[in-house]
Length: 275
Ligand code: DGL
Image (cartoon, rainbow, N blue to C red; front, side, top):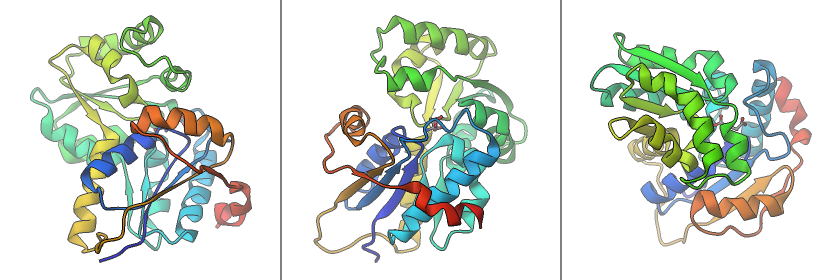
């Protein structure tokens, strides 16, 4: 039994979709969430910069005495898995559990992957999918407009601007005959209806935050690291800029309000970013 919180981080708000799933599968667990709202987006940055930011974010969480770290960010998961694997606590990310789930669920062996520029250009999803099932056909598409659309609140299914962007990005995947589509960015479940509208009913959408939450739950159980006793769960939220914006949009991601969002100076973790 381990009553310490689970540490979850993302470049900003998107990781809250994974927290929402964690709340469902592990309702007794406390969470410390770190969103790097001052430096978002990560998905348009170089590999070196994403890795430096990821080191700092992980250092922040491990200094807060978490029992496990979840990188709830497709970009970090695709770029900095080796940094996470070296942490002193169990590390989880969205990449491998999502690839395994998609490989299992495809009927035709044709899988689509969408994510940020950095995620798609890393080639990590293709590698993980082919490791899980060598015969798969994989079609990838970067969707750089999706994150700003979500952050700007264009999230309703009837929102034409989001539908048009989705159609432009996803039509080639639909025509390629994918029957499973990986939402490789934790922002994308928020616009899953627009994505589903383009892809059609026969295509299953795989939510990377959900798959990561399920994998984390299973592994903490296996290691006998779940919380016990009567203590109520709690959550703390840290950001690097504009806490009031975070609190406002967090409700959209989580389905409930958050309070007491704290600002943290991530640059003070500079030393960790170079070691
Ligand atoms: N949360 C990031 C991801 O899942 C998307 C936002 C960003 O580009 O930082 O890749």
